[in-house]
Image (tube, rainbow, N blue to C red):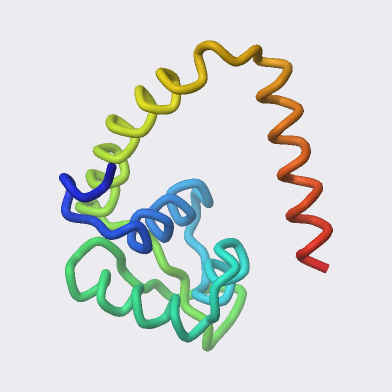
Length: 117
């Protein structure tokens, strides 16, 4: 899905997490959400900053842990991802009752909470 946009799945995940955060996240925060090591996320965010998709901004809540935010190019990439992903998701779930989708989402949330402890 992301290959045509020139993004790896790792980049796609990072862009999505940041876009949904609304105000940026720290590298450790992104790592927690993705279940990845801080070092792995740091490597990919550094490359994405160099590529112009992300930028680092000072964090008013923490002196050493900067916020990672989308640049305009990153926001454009996120929108392009949504333009591809949303129709795909709708097409592949339209025959599943909303109640079943809601139950599945609740189950995933419970599992995340259980394993996040």
